[in-house]
Amino acid sequence: MYTKYLFKLLSYIFYIPNLIGAQPVHVYSKTGLFYTLSKSRRRLFSSITIFITVVSCFVIRTCEIWWNKGGNRHPYYHVCYALTFVAVIELVCLIQMYWSRNEVCVVLNQMTRYSLRFEHIWMIQGQYNPIALRSKPLPGIVLDICCILLAASCNSLFWTNTAYYCSFPDTSIFHVTLLPIEWQNWYPVYYGHVLFLTYYTTIVYESLLSNAIIALIFAVSGYTILSSGLYFKSGKRYKTYRSLHYGYNLIHEFISLQLIFKQINYIYGIWLLAIHGLFGQFALFCNYSVIKYWDQLNPMTRILLIVWSFVVQIPWTSFLHVAGNFFQLSQRTLKSWKGIKCRNVLERKYFSKARKACRPIIVGADGVFT
Image (cartoon, rainbow, N blue to C red; front, side, top):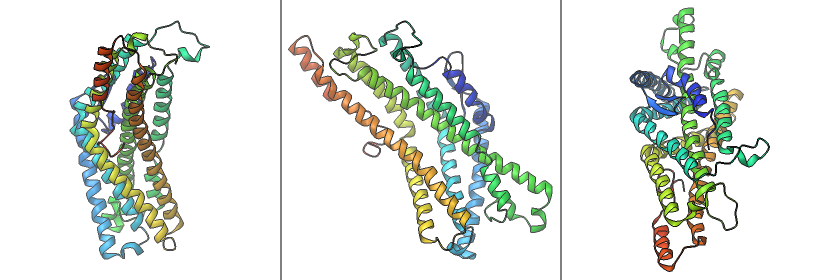
């Protein structure tokens, strides 16, 4: 299911987020164990403290523009409001990770260990054939490629906010604007603020990278187990042993997977609702500002708001689509068990009752993302 390079790749990818305090999860490449350290917790707490100061400054300066400097007519109001929104979203993500860091490590270990156990017990271990596509761990290859692409994109975007500041230093949301004018252009202050700006922008992208990879691990592992193992279709050629499709084994494995996702929902359920609301309001603000104040906005502000709207809507819509498809796949999996043959009427009766007692696997709050 996983390639032999996955855990080593994750240990490299998580190195920078751990170093700067974007997330506290480490990976031991030799055993594939997810764990956290006290120094990682302290770094994450430092990042939360930094973002509290960032959010406080952003909120104060944005409110000042709204009340004292013309509000919507101010040339930088919409950019300041959008940056404040992004900082609040990042602060929520950091607090959630700090609050549930141990539980995240536990459920990651549960998911990866269960996937490896499922592969060891039920997957047919044939001879490796480099030509036969069926013999390759395609889900693991997809997971590795997605992790590499995410790492390459997020690690190459840390300069974006700094470039905006260097191009538009008069934007009143930045911390350096709190100082007198003659201090703002003093080289130690200017370059110190550039480094500070680059640092907390890097935290944003590295936190996004870590959460995206964790979500990928859950999605690829769960989808592979459901589609390749638990879903039953008469006459289909499977890579699993036939004994998996006995009633007791199917019920046992499905409930095991369901318990893992129940733990995932316990950790991320409330957070997903909050992020869903924040992302929706952020995209709505960007779209509304561009449509309503098109003539008042300068070209760069229009471009930024449109790009930010797409950057938020496309990944989040993809996540909602995957969550809905995962729910539908678990529904189809339970319905497909009607075609499984039982040895006698009594076994059929018990298996039918057990199948009806199993609920589809959900992501987030029930009825929200399904």
